[in-house]
Every structure is written in C-alpha cells, then in structure tokens.
Length: 635
Image (cartoon, rainbow, N blue to C red; front, top):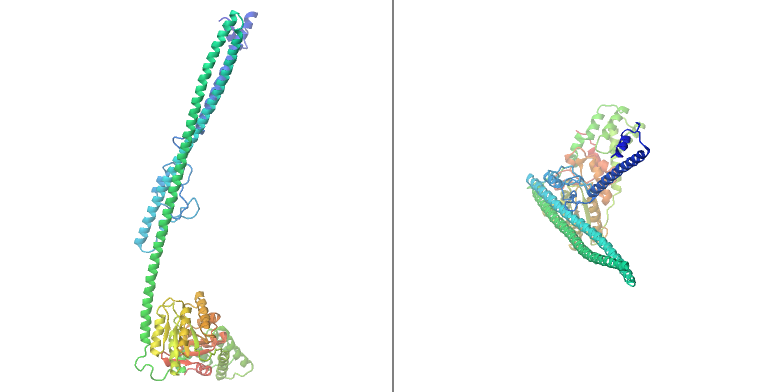
C-alpha cells in the first residue's frame, strides 16, 4: 500500500511537487504504468464487446424471417375482366387487399400491369333498360369480389411457397455448416491418432533402456497416447454422427424443396385452370350477348320489314287504278310545268322584263335571278352569256327578244345532250335490257310500272326483275305494279344477292322469249360507296347473262330536289355510265329548270318526264316542246 499511495498522488496531482526517495519513486512509477495499461486494456475490451454486439444485431436484422414472411402486395393479373386493381404500394400491410376488396372502384382507376383503363360498372350505364344495367352492374361487382378473393388466395399460396423455400434453404446451409464442422473434427481426430501413434512408438523405443526415469516417461507417454486415442475415437464418432445429421438435413432440405416446388406447381396449375375457366365463362357470356343482340336485330328487322311491307301494300293499293282513274286525257306538258312558270325563275324573269328598258341594270337583275334558280351556276352563266352577246350586238330591243335568246339557248342545251345519247342494240332473238337506277323515294318503281304499261300497250312482251333485295317489301311493291299492268315479275328472297337475282331473272326472260326486260335496283343513299359498288357488280353480271347488256341505263331523278338531282346524276354516272334520265314529279315543283342543269352539266339526255299520277302522265321528252312551254310567260 505504501507504493500505491505516491502513485495515486502523482496521478491525481501531476503538476504538484512530490518528494520520494529514489527506490520508492521507481516503484511508484511502475505501479502507475501498470494501472494505466489495465485501464486502457479494459477500454479496448469494452469497445470490442460493443462492436461484436452491434455486429450480431445487424446480422439478425438482415437475416430473412422464415416463421413469419412478409406477404408481398397483391397485384391483379392484366385481364379485361378485372374492374378495379388492388394497390401495388410496397409498404402495404397484409390486410390491405381485404380493405381494397371492400372499397368501391372509381371509374378512373388504371391497371398497374398494362396501364390500360379498367372497365367499371359505370360503363354499363345507358346500355339497354335500367334492369339490365343494374343486373350487369351486380354481375361485374360479383366478378370483382371473386377476382380479389382469388388474388388474395394466390398471394397467400405464393407467400407460403416462398417461406417453405427459404426455410429449406436455411436448413441446407445449416447442414452444410454442420458437415464442415464434422469434417474438421474428423481431421483433428486423425491428427490426434497419428500423434498418439508416434508417442506410443517413442515409448516402445524407450523400453529398450533400463533407466527408471525412462520407464516412468514411457508410462506417462502410454497413458497420454491412450487418452488421445480415446479422444480421437470420440471425435470420429462425433464426426460420423455429424455426417449422418448432415445427410438427414440434406434429405429433409431436398424433401422440403420438393414440397415447395410442388406447392408452386399446384398454385400455378390452379391459377391456369381458373384463368381457363374464366376465359371460357367470358366467351360463353360474349356468345350469349351476341346471340341476344342478333335476336334483337332480327326482331327489329322483321318489324321494319313488316311495316315496310304493309306500307308498300297500302301504297300499291292506292296505286291501283280506281274506276275511271286512267280514263280521260293525260295531263299536258303545259299543265305539268305550271308551277315552274308561275313560281320559278321564269316568273321572276317575267316580272323583270315587264315595262323595263333593256340595259345593263336589267342585265344585272337577270344575272341574279338565273344564279339563284335551280338550273346550276354553269348553266346560268351560259344563258347569261348568250344574253350579253346579243346585247353587245344591239340585237335586244324589247323583252320578247330576250325571251327568244333564252329559249334558243335552252333548246341548244337540251338538243346537245340528246345528240350524244348512246343506246345499245340487242342481238336477234335477245331482249332489250334496261337497268333502272335511282334513290329511294324518287318514283323509281312507279316509273318502271308506267314504262312497262306503255311497252305492253305497243304490243311488246315485257318482264320485270326485282333486283332491289335490300329495301324491305321492294319486290312486293314491284309485284303489285306487275299485276296491275299485267306483266310477269321475277324476284328472289329478301336479302339475297342482288347480282344473283338479276342474273337468274335475265336468263329466265331469255328463256321466256321476252322482248323487253326492266331491272329494278337498290336505291339507298346515292353517296353510299357500298351501293355504288353493288350497282357496278349488277351491271357486270347482266353482261354475262346477255352479251352487251344492259342496253340502256335509266336514272330516275326527282325534280323537287332541285340541284341535288345534279349531284345524284354525277355519282350514278361515275358508277354505271347512265345513258338516259327519267325526271319525275315535274307537276309538283317550281324547280323544273333543273332539266337544263342536268343536260348542260352531265350531257345526259332526258328520255321520259312525269307530269302527273296517271299511267299516261309518263311522257316521252321532246326538247322543243319542253322549251316552248317552259319559256311561255305566265298568263
């Protein structure tokens, strides 16, 4: 204690003076140094222990948990049947899928797998009746709940399989570790055996001497050798036990891996079977929906056809001549053009010329009247040009001269179109085939009936062919006209191929030795591309039935449509090369001037004009007679 007191005093007060004898000073310095070393060593031990504990805690946190694996967030498969996706946030808890399943999907949700909008029950709103939409919504919600339950089950199965795989891997690693330890112990046992053998050999060599110390040394060496041999044997047994344990662990790991693989395969197979079943159910539902749609369409079509048939029968009944209806004189052309002369551009020109001097101001008014008429801009410019030319030559002295210039130019327009008419000539023994075109509602079927009446009155054998298989009851309407006139009518089934019906009809007409064949055709919207292609096909088929057919292509135009008739003529001419025009309903419109526009722009002659309802009111068009009556000032 006397040595420690000066040492502690020196440590406590290093700057203060301490008086010691030389021997005591040396001893005190040694004790102080020892204390410093002990404290430093304790500090190092403390740091090492702290670092080791921290390393253990870090390794435990990084080591995957086998007993309670984290369930990965469920993700719905990319399927059009899934109406609301489950959230794919990595931090979602295991209970998140259940919460999502209980929530109502928003229409704007998007599937995480393919970034495509997901169908929702709201998309069914407005489709069909309210009950059907409600039932569809309930079915979609049931499907959604089933899909979420199925996804949750799949996620749980995948989690179990992954946990089993991780557990098997951990067992395999542990078994390998034990095997390595057993190998090390076996090597150590072998080394001890070898050392014991060497010691025993040395002892045997020492037996040759008689020295008492040598004998004791030999006994000690023999005892040590036996001890080491026992330890080696014990180590060998431990190594064998460890090897067997390693083998058992490997077997268990393989079995566990096989079970995990089997579980994964089973989950995959079940998912594939469910997907197949869902696909089959979806296909069956779509097929059922399509069948229902076809049934509704068929019912709607049948209803429309029945209504159209009833309407056609009513119209045909009205079209039947009443007693004395076809008796008496037909309407004159003057009567047919009455509204055009009294209400159309002719009446406006008459009011312009009345009591006015022929000058530039009057010419401007004439220009405005012509360009606002239904004769078309091109024809109006041509008529106005003729008036200007006559005015420049000072040939216009009064209104009668202006009327004469307009009438002469109009007659040149009509006669120029007639001069370019092209009509085919059939071979001897073959009928003259006429293809009749026109938009529905222009009077196409009525014109065919009236034309067949005129031909029959001239002693010709006429056959009608109902080639309009698209419009409901079109064939029945033509049949009524055929019975009224007294001529045969050949038709096919509703919805049949028009070209096939026309081909068979023309062939039948040849077999019946008919002289004239009038073919009715489909007449939907004139701007329908499919209609125009169908008309081209019908025309080609006629040429296969009879070479050179059709010999004439007549386009029926409604005079009440005005300049729209010119547009129809352009489109039909591009498709079928129209050779003549039947202009109907001239008596019911003030737009009779459209005749000039059609002939001037299309260079297609007017063959027939309709000026009344009677059969006799379908007249052969005479350009001179038409111009004389059209430019006759109203009385």
